Every structure is written in structure tokens, then in C-alpha cells.
Length: 212
Image (cartoon, rainbow, N blue to C red):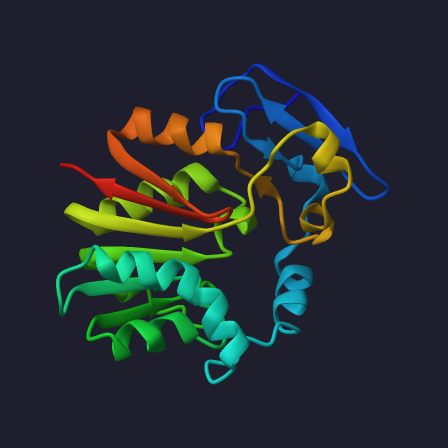
């Protein structure tokens, strides 16, 4: 068994196997993850992302993003500076936050790869439907925390693992670009480890506040 890609825990066991992949779970942070050898390469991964249609003018997509935008905006000072990390080809969230009066920067490994924005610090960082794609989740997590000013916010959207029975029938795991799967317990582990306040909003929104 390989070490956990989030907490480097060595106590890892088999969680589930389907027709395409195996899934392991860390006993320390409870992350469920796909073994490295079964992940897509960068070209295959991007080919799937290129099929995504995230139109900033689509009302349905804007309502979807509002589940994060609304509670995050309520916690921010007017004119806060934010980074939408992993924004994809249609950066709708940054447009909505800009309409709310915030100053937004964009970063995406494939579509907005300007790394200069990663040299700044922000009042908040957002990552909607991003964290489940990360091949090196701890590395990116630490990067996010370094980008956020003390008192700032990390706003995430991702579907959460419930239990093995639900996982076996879960459509979310069938996307081959989804390689790490978080539960409430995983986020609580990270919040405690890294000294963050945490709020769960609905079924798939997580807000974390960096205290220092």
C-alpha cells in the first residue's frame, strides 16, 4: 500500500474496487484515494476537462456556484481580493464575485497557467469542484494556506464521502479525473492540524478560516 497523498499516513487499507480502479483509505485522515498507477496522464486528463461546459452566463451554473458564493460573500469585507484556483476555461465564479464588488485573480493549471498570481496573498481563495482532482493534494493544500492572509478564507465545493455502501453506488467516483475523495472527517482533521476554523454548509460547501 502507498502512503496517503494528503497526510503521508502509512496506515492505508483497501476501501473499494470497481471495474476501472481501486480505492484506498487512509486510517489517519480518512481520505479515500486512487493509487498513483491508476491515474490518468496529463493529456488524457485535459481531454476530459476540454469537454466541460461551464458557461458564466448560464443561470443554472450560476445558481450552482451561488451555494459557495453567497455564504462566502457574507463573510467578506467589501472589495476583498480573491483568487479562483482551478477556475477552468469558463471562470464563472470569479465573474460573480467581481459583480459582488471583489477583486479577482485566476489560476488554472491548463487554462490560466500564469503562476505570477501565486506570488500574491489574498483575502480569500476559492476552489469549486477542484480538490477531488488533485494528484498532490497536500502540496496544493499547503499552497492555498500560504496564499491566504491571516483571517482570510478558503472556500471549497466538493462532494463528500459518507460510507462504503454509499461509495459503491456513487456516481462521483466514476469520473476518471476524480482521484481523491474527502469526507467531513478529512476536513476536520485538516482544520485541527492546521489551526483553521471550519464550517460545513449544505452537502458540498466547506468554508475554512485561517486564524494566523
